[in-house]
Image (cartoon, rainbow, N blue to C red; front, top):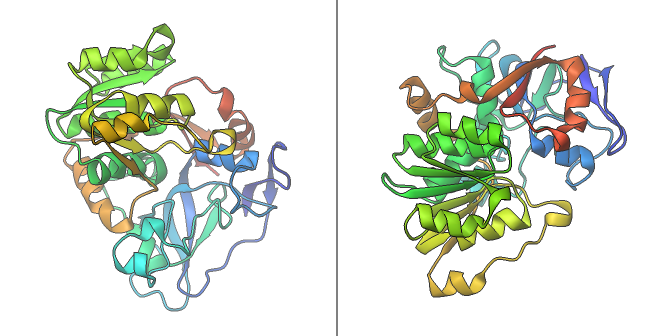
Length: 345
C-alpha cells in the first residue's frame, strides 16, 4: 500500500510503499476512502504524543469500506461502509463496560498507538466495540470529518457541558473543532459567540450560525464576551488548546457556567493557569473532553440526516495522498478556513 511515513519527528514525511496490514483477532482492515488532516496529527509529528513509536504512519479521521475481517469479529463483515471515533475502547474493561470507551486505559488510537489512515489501508483493533456503520446518505468525506473534531465538539457541548436552547456559548478558536462547535451549538438553539484571530474563519463562523464574533487581536476578549452575553457565557469552549484561550474561556463564564476543554494542551502548553478563585466563588464547572464513544454516533448521524447539521460545509479542500506530507508539516502555519481531507489515494 501507499502511505505517508516518517522515521523522525519534525522531518518532512514521505509517501512510501509499505506492507499491506492484516487484521488482528477482533480487528478489521479498512480500505480508506477519505481521511482528514487534523492538528492532532501535526502535534504527533512534532513529537508531542508519547504513544507514537517511530517509524510511523499518521492519520485518525477516516471513513472507508471493510476490506478484511479478523477472527472473532461478529458485528461487521467485508464490504460494509464504516467510520470510527479516533479513540477506541478495548470493550471489556470497567470504563468500556460503563459506556465510556473514550477513556479506556487500553485505548486504541489509529495514528497514535498504531499506524494510521494516511494510507490506502489501515488496521483497526476492537472492531465490534468501535466501528460505526454509515447510512447510505452520509458520504465518506462527511464521515471522515466526524471522527475527531466534530465528534469531540459534539461530546464537549452536548454530553459534557449540556448546552441548552437560549444559552450563550463562547467558542474560543475557529479551526475545525471550533467551527464544528459553532454548528452544533447553533443546532441546539444556543446563541454563539465565535472568537478567533482570523477574519476569514470568523466569517465562516457567522455563516454557520454565530450571532456575534470577536477578533481576539482587537481588545479584551473576556470583557467583550461578558458585554455581548449580558453577564457572561453559560457555556464556553477552548477549541484551540492554548493557555490564553483556556484562561479566557473560564474567565468569561457567568455564575455557574460550564467550561469545556477540547483543544489539546501539549508540549509547552501542557499546563495552563485558570482563575480558580472565580471557579470557586461562582461555582463554575470545568470539563475535559477526549473523543466520543461509537455508540453515541447515532445522535450525530440523526442530526445530519435530518439536515440540522452539515459537517460537509467545514471541508475546505480535498487533496491527494501525495500532497499530505507538506500539508501535515505546514499545519502550524495554515491560516485558511475549512478542513483538508485526503480523498485521492
